Amino acid sequence: MTTTHRNQAAATHDAETGKLPGIRHIIAVASGKGGVGKSTVSVNLALALQMQGARVGLVDADILGPSIPGMLGIPTGQPPDVTDEGRAIPIKRHGIATISMAMITGDDTPAVLRGPMVSKYLKMFIDATQWGELDYLLLDLPPGTGDTQLTLAQSFPLSGAVIVTTPQDVSLKIARRG
Image (tube, rainbow, N blue to C red):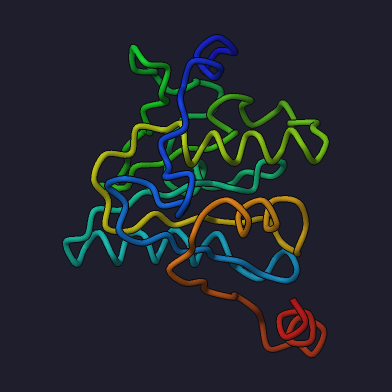
């Protein structure tokens, strides 16, 4: 998505309620720490919902460490097509509409961004993407409780969240605290 297209893409969510038209439920998949299987849970939850007949979108909201395209077999470094209005068209794989920073940067180019830019990309991936009608929009968050999680909580109404952890004491303590 080019800068021109990003600037042209109008926000689609209702300013008062934060709801996105055409999307019934927004579910965050989060963890207190990395390496607990959060992205695996996100992909498997998306596939399970899709196999039950649901229309599912998946946002790789880990802007600085995207992994969803690799897990779904989506090529990286190839920005998604855009509509005439400048809205990104998510790539569909296995029936799951997906958007990720890895589609823009590729596997070998890190996204070096400060907090405000991370928040801007997150909002753009959710709000300036042509999702169409979805039963579920899953958000695979980065670990922790930083800018991404705060932006999400302030900008979009979640229907629910899945907190992923492992049985180790440190992981459980962080999950309870987060």
